[in-house]
Each structure stands twice: as structure tokens, then as C-alpha cells.
Image 1 (tube, rainbow, N blue to C red):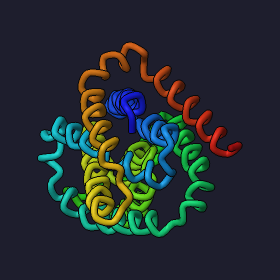
Image 2: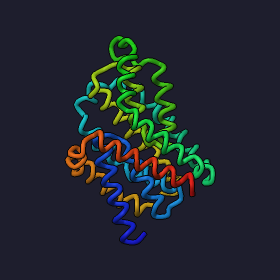
Image 3: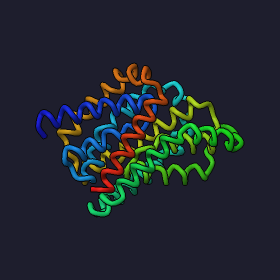
Length: 253
């Protein structure tokens, strides 16, 4: 990795950090950047997971007040999150490079679709929300849903926060800020498990991961103002257009 590649990756990670802080979907910028500088798709995916994980910690710290009141939920959902993340990590590393190359464009398009319909998903979740459980009880179906989402989160992950927030809105009715806080913590936990697994068994490129991690943290803190001035709607449109473009390039190459 030369200085030009490092600058390009740092810029992409800075943008990803800002996007994740405002709208989610930052991986749709940082993951293709790793592909663009020549890393194989699985290496790019693993390295991207490692690079963006610190940003989730910052978000969870910011929501620490909302999380304090959800300790029972956190304990209840930790096991399915960890087991699902381990399963997703194992499946990813067991997937052949050629097969992963073939499905990456469709994973990107799926993440773009989630981002495009984020507001509708949220509205649908609110409309179809189940009756609140007594106390702080977590419905059994949510354990299954979180396990499945954790597999996807460790395997690819782009758009994970969007669909997780929708699922929480349906199965665990609560104030949106509480749901968002729980979503962020679950994402941090899922990605932490994946990072540990990839650090031991995966093909992580540590130098670009370190460069991108610092830039993503800075983007999450400093880039929010720029992202907000652009507006959530136009930010989302820009990221989706970029993601679709990348997917088409990968399909046609």
C-alpha cells in the first residue's frame, strides 16, 4: 500500500464514519474502496469489518444512558448475537473467493435496497409493532431474529443497522432512541466477535485497517456536520447511487 492508496482509503473511511453516524450504510463506501486499490473481495470484507468496528463503540458510548435502562435486554440478546456472529464469520472464511466474488454485487444491491427503503421499513415496523411485553421481557422470536441478523452482520454487514432497527421496532416496541441505542450495541457486539475471529483466522490487512480505523473515527466525530449540511436524504441518495454503480461495475467486470 503506497501513500496514494493510503490517502484514498483514509478519505473513504472518513466518509464512511460520517455516513454511519448520520444515516448508516458507510460500508457501501469503504468496502468498494478496498476493492478499488486491489485487495481481493474477502480480504476487503474482513479488513473493512476490522477498520469500522471502533466507530460502533463511540456510538454505543454516546447512548450509554439509554443502554443503562436496557440491561436485561442486553443480557438476553448477547448469546444469540455472539453465536450468530461466530457462525457468520465461519461461513465467510469457508466461502471460496470465486463464489464470494459472484455474490458481492448482489449483497451490495441488497444493502442499497435496505438503505433506499429505510424510512418505509421504519414506518412499517411502527405500524406493525407487536404489543409491548410485560416488564422488560424479550420475546423468543427476537432471539431467533437476532441470531439470523448476526450471521448476516458478520458475513457482510452493510445495511445491518437498518434492518435490525426495523426488527426491534416490530418485536420490541419502545422509544426510538432506546431501540437505536440497542441496535448500535448489538452491531458493536456482532462486529467485535467478527473482528476477534478474523484477527485469529482471517486474512486481515492490518496496515490499511489501522489507517481506515483512525479515519473512520475522525469521520464519525468531525464529518457529521458536513453530512448534516448535505442532508440525510441527499446523503442517502448519493451513497445508494455510488453503491449501485459499484455493484454494476463488479457484475460487468
